[in-house]
Length: 315
Ligand SMILES: Cc1cc2nc3c(=O)[nH]c(=O)nc-3n(C[C@H](O)[C@H](O)[C@H](O)COP(=O)(O)O)c2cc1C
Image (cartoon, rainbow, N blue to C red; front, side, top):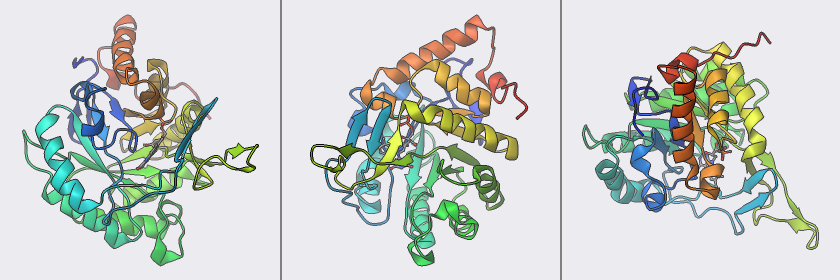
């Protein structure tokens, strides 16, 4: 599947194609290696990594509805030490051609910086690189600053990125929420603070009710909505951010077909994340890559990068 037509250089890294598995939907790779040919992907984003292990939220954590999925996993993860000892070695050994992005979460600036610094120190060197880049999930509450999301407060956002920037030379992507009142402004703040790129978007808050029990369907109550309904939300956020910053973008949300990936690319994304659709059907990423290849051939597009930001719309 690796062809020069789909290969793309982003933030100094060559991706063999623009398709990247979205954080939280692919574990740390090993868990899904039997069902998805990971070595054919452009990239894989790990599940969140926090300093301490996180148990996550009570079950049920995931529920489906007609237009997508709602989850409240609560960023469950084994914590930094176990990720370093169990998952980093696997990533370094098994996926030499696929780019690996480590998704990072925290409740304080120091948390983010520690995870980035320690993962950076064990990320390895070619040909055994476990982590090529970082993705900061800034949709977490900053406990020390009153619980407002890092991404929603320019000062917190600047601090968390600057502290992470200071401890790694690897590219840093900052993942923003679609609920931000001005996503383009947050993207500018992120780039000014040292981010190399942005990921758009995280899930949208939602609530599903079990009417017989008159209770939320999810154990935690509310959750994050992902899947088909998120597609136009993510594409618009990508478009807005692409007009505000020059940095490369990863478009995520509702991608299930090559045509969806093309929408993100035309809106300004260099890479496209696939989450919910691949959880539902593991053959989806492979199909998207093959159909993208065919689409480019049919439209005489020599390099997928020619299509980035080619949407014709003067909003
Ligand atoms: C079960 C599940 C777990 C997720 N966990 C994370 C996470 O740990 N960190 C993160 O930044 N995003 C997380 N996300 C959000 C996805 O990476 C992605 O932004 C979102 O699902 C939209 O893409 P999709 O519609 O293709 O699923 C999670 C999504 C799902 C469905």
